[in-house]
Image 1 (cartoon, helix red, strand yellow):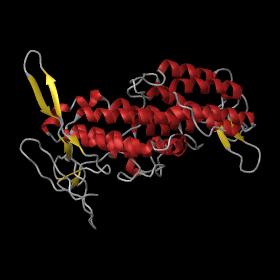
Image 2 (cartoon, helix red, strand yellow; image 1 turned 90 degrees about the vertical axis):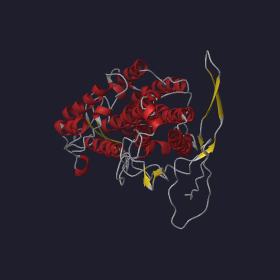
Image 3 (spheres, helix red, strand yellow; image 1 turned 30 degrees about the horizontal axis):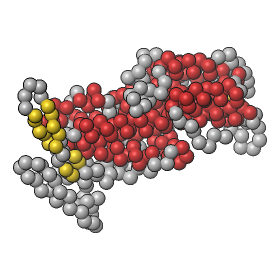
Image 4 (cartoon, helix red, strand yellow; image 1 turned 30 degrees about the vertical axis):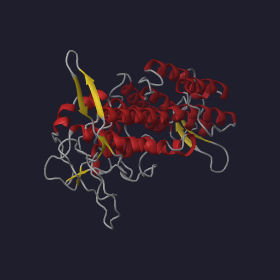
Length: 416
């Protein structure tokens, strides 16, 4: 953290940072300007107009304050991440009921953690919110099939066309509870939410240019519309808070200023960003965190060009989490089938199925997703054909994996 000496001038609003160590460090202020570059705008007809666009110094971490009070909070996102984890558990328990799961999913009620009930926050209405209207109903069919067909067969032996329990041979072999096609529903559900809720809300929601620019006038005027915890009055602009909410879908259960990844209880993006950082693309996590931090500072500095540049970095890099894993689990599933480890294969293919569903909630540098809703549905239909996962081989899954890598340009590492 840094102590900050602010020096303002009438013309340039340049703020100079004085750095020193303090045994009781204070928070980094947002209004820190590194330079005031000149931007020339040609108006037709009329003279050339010169304006100053402030460029913030990249803060050391995601810590922003006004008058000593943090302006960062994303409690709704933290709640939804906890709800998602609870839904995953419910989708893997033979004591669950359809009414219970639907109440949790659609109404945000019925959680064993009482702090999640009565908040008004829900997962269901944030699932596929910016995409095709066909996506949320897919999750509903998963709930129904799990409760109606998997739970009643919980202690039966699963086989092709038969729901139940399947355990790989040998000591410590994996056990899965699957439907007649081999789907392990808690895995479909969680991996589907990685794209269908978390990525969708970040990429197509809170960090979208349309949403952010929709509140530009008030951000320019310094209108505070939200009150952060600990503040006596409104102290956060709507644009700042939107950005924080996007941040919360990734770091809502992690350490805000020193994220460790793989946060306790987080089964969505945070967990899988850690995996990509560790194997496929070291350095990706810092790139994303730094972009979130600089983008937030850019909003306070009203530098929207810089804001949009950072948003693009976040969208492109976060999409890689889904791109890598969607392909990885196809290859992994094929290798396990080849080794006769069907429980491992069903688990991997269930993860991959959810990640493939999530591919439509990605964004490449050109602004398009890795795959459209129609292309995603075509791949899922290939996995569903016949008796589903039971009918696939290493070769057929390799073909699907290659379709994904061709679409993403990403080749997953450590495929076994």
